[in-house]
Length: 538
Image (cartoon, rainbow, N blue to C red; front, side):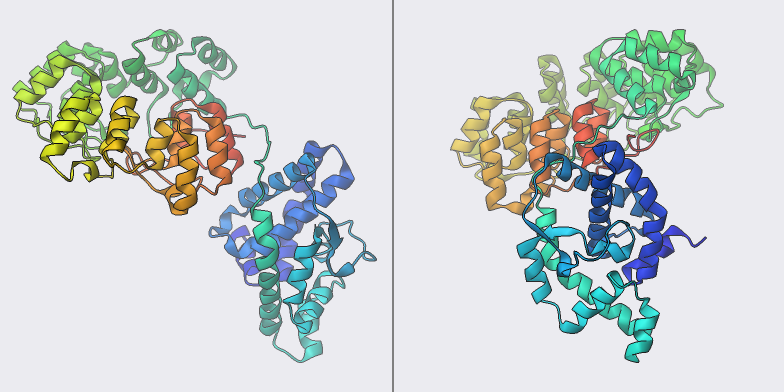
């Protein structure tokens, strides 16, 4: 059998027989899915025909031919949802082909599908007589392209090219309305068990974790797409929440900590026993060392032991974080002093441009701030923004006329930092002083009116990366679990699979990481991709 990728490429080049092969291959499954949704065979057939028509018109836009299946599924879901919601326009059958049977989902029936009358008439007037005749011969009369070429005395390639041009010209009229649908698909999807258990671990849902393990004991050994074991991920979550119920459940179920999970849990004996067979600065998931993980957990005895064994306090993870950064981020004042005394660099900057002082300001610990300042870092406008300190910001702005427009390495502005931290008073002060409101700040400030006014004036801003993590507006809405805002951004054309600049994740990956399941469902239904364990939601 010819590989799917090659069949799709042939169809993209105007080969109707290749497209017919795609219909034959996916038509049965499509009808089953449509019938399961609609509960009516006749309506299901109509929807499948409509979906294949749209696929025929848009197949040239498919950039990854091997992804035809998932691409076509999204088209089918949209058509099912359109029928369910009964938002139809006055229609007419293309070229008035009402006398032609339309009971099959094969290409010859595609162009008989009902489309908006005014758009259809407009599209047909833009075709030449030859193009209209060719469409009729191929799609209604089932005439093979080879036979048409022989009848006209033309090369087969010329016939294929003419057919391709006719479809594209028609698509330029029909497609904009199809693409402007103002409703999201209403598909109900359940995430894979692997994805569910990682989300449950993040939220500390012990009963859910235990239930999933009872159903599938092998989940105990699951790893996510970034290589974190379930136990290590649970430890990571506990470092933020200070709750270890999930860890207790996993250990009771028989989870065995590896080198990095043991470090994250502060299990000194197995970590030190692994040395020197395992080099002390060996990196694992997120390019973190055992020292990184021990610092995150605040395990001073293990941190000291690792440093005694030569661990490098300036080793960086994927995001440019050293153990020093993590000590500040998690508020471990005593560990910060220890790391600095052992050679930790207080001046190193993370990949997003934040330094120790910015992290300390975000942490809100006066002790950390004092210790970092004594290490030689100077207060700047981003420190003031993270602190929400209006007086300091005012002083710095007067001293530096460009303070309001300064940006960190991946684009974060003082306003964005203040908005992300929830410092509303300082945000209003910065705006009054002339700072420009942007979509990321508007979302953080829950100002949807301003957000969409901005996007009306600057449509490209909908996919612009900004803020501390280089998020797009869709990322920012997703990680906050703002389903309503996620939906509105998607309907405004936000790129559902654009990566952020810090973590290189799609909005759906970020939503799943932070356990925003309903937001992730919306993103999935609009074509969101993710590399979580178990693949896409099903």
